[in-house]
Image (cartoon, one colour):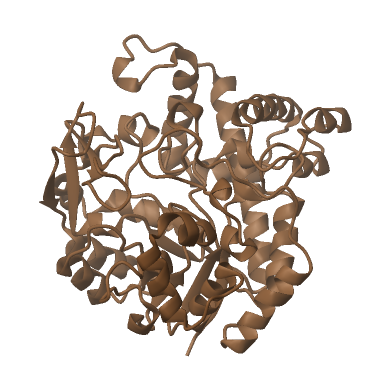
Length: 470
């Protein structure tokens, strides 16, 4: 039986001297450390462009196909002769445990302008543009107009004339991003590391995807989830939902293009908000909260039949969290997709499927996710005394380090994959939380100041050996 272990750490959270983690040397060093400690899975968040207007969220992007320019490595550009030493030095930002996004956007834009001036088109670049024309043409034009007008596309009245050089620069930036990503992924694969990527279910309303394909979206409603554990008023995401009838008429071609694109980037793909393929929650456009929404059925079986025809190996994971009913479970199990078990959800219901003794083999166990408080402060700050006592009863002892006890619970699970956020490996607290759902400010900022060394990796390696995940 296959038993694998891995780490959840987004690219932006890697240490670097340029304000944000990137696709440069520290990403390769992280792969080496994972390999040395018996890990074989690296999970990242969406790689799509982010922007400050929406809190830098990788789940609210102007493109579901494009890569994020601020993750491009200055050191790799220097190595390739696209920027000089003086430019490289000018890009440095003092290391910290938070991403200074405003400064990062500014310096990376300067870096890419310099690199573009030094770039000479070649066959590899032209081949990239041809292979990705189905999304790259629309995205490049959209991005240029967006930068000029600085307002959402439905307020665009008279479109400005876009120069060929502007379009070429957008294509160049995407070419560099995917070139650097491809090199990193190939290196990881050569070391036995498979990369798990996230597939956000919806694009942003203001995105190239919606602008260029308006007929496959419903713009009169916004996606979200009803009031739940994370938010008393629900989550109002603002994304439009799909016109599933139109997509079905076209054989779900747009979705197949997305998945084919994602499988070039990742070895395994996690379907974000999987329950939205069974039924989706929508709220009238313009509402301030998600309280006045309703559920509508989605053609999940027809969609995943087409997906299975095109991708018979089905290298997917279902993010089956939130308001889950039997229909969601049936859809997941019909197509044999592994679901998620999260230990931070396990102790609120004595029959919870997240409790380790209820886990199943075809699943992925996590201590927490990027939307949770890290496990240490979850235990001390989110649980009441009765719940903490329940956890200690389950463990059978009072651990000196709560996070290590939960790592063992996760590793010993029968689930075939075990993924632990780096924050939980390190035993960090709420200061390292990646995202608080329903909150716009202060998310997606945490990062490693320095690469962990020594005892951490020895401990991780011992867990892999003890629980058969090496």
